[in-house]
Length: 461
Image (cartoon, rainbow, N blue to C red; front, side):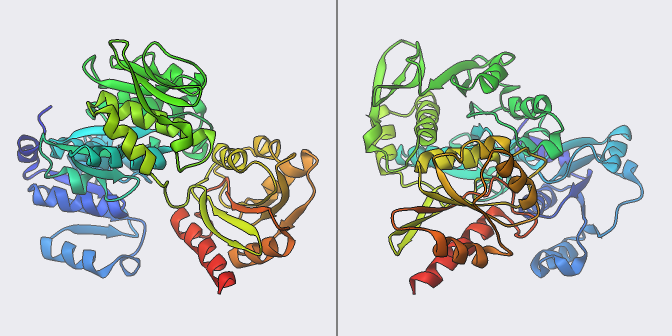
């Protein structure tokens, strides 16, 4: 498939429906309109719930909008561009497909509209940390780099005018990947695979298949970086044509990135070992972050970046907001914001990283998860469990079934923080790691994490 300006020309005069007007949907609508397409948009929200600037843009550009309603004639569109939050299985989308429309997502559109090279990173957990670190390494190497996707700008915003000299370091979710068809990163990565988003995908097999699409169009000239220690994730490499590069915290490898004692090593295809840094050099804590660094080092090395540049950037990396982020100490109690821990596995990782003496704040939209595995990690680590949100009763049931009874139910975040401060003893840690999405109470996990931090700031005054 042609990319860049050649692809843009094929869109001229075509009727395209953009479904969903979040950040990525608005960016897609703008890019399509600038490419000469006849654009229609649809969103479940009414006009009064959308920002006035974009409404004015639509009016100026003659973009027809169905806000709080649906188009009646789905045969009118040559293409539908779905925002990540829109399930492709919805009836009206399937009707459009039956009428001959091509169904793609914003990630696929971004790939087609630009000419930049992609480093695409997916997995259940660790995507944001790894993507951010890879972006820092690429920038340190002097490459023209944009960090996009689930973090930063929508992919299409940066991709639309990208050239072959540009790199797009992209955090990609299963929601974005399931609507790709031609998307081909030069370097891809699958960090891990644990249950998440089963309310959307239905089964782990379907969820894994969506993740595996990150490497579906790669060739032997491309690289798939993948977790050797995670059997379920590593199995996703079996069908790719890409050159598979494993990373491992537990095994020395014939090629790839691994931990040799305390040394982080990358071994090239020629068998030569390259020292990146020592584990003690890292500013980010926990075994999971060692894995994130291994993945980032492998991605960067096989994208052609010098090991010394990689090592220097890794040593300086402070971590990311909302991922086991130290927020302050009050009365000799440390507070950590792990609002990005939106599934059970992420919360378990945070508990393991902090060790013991934990007052855990959890709860929210559980996304049809089971919480038994979370409760199994309380013994010897979690002193008290503070719950909030819609699915708090489900977590409480799992905790009690595991024999854990020191449980407090709270109405909101300030109540949680007050309760935690009241029961925490000197030397203990208060950890917000909800194991749930935020959508029952907050717009996103960032808003939830910042509210938590604001509550702590109020105590520090």
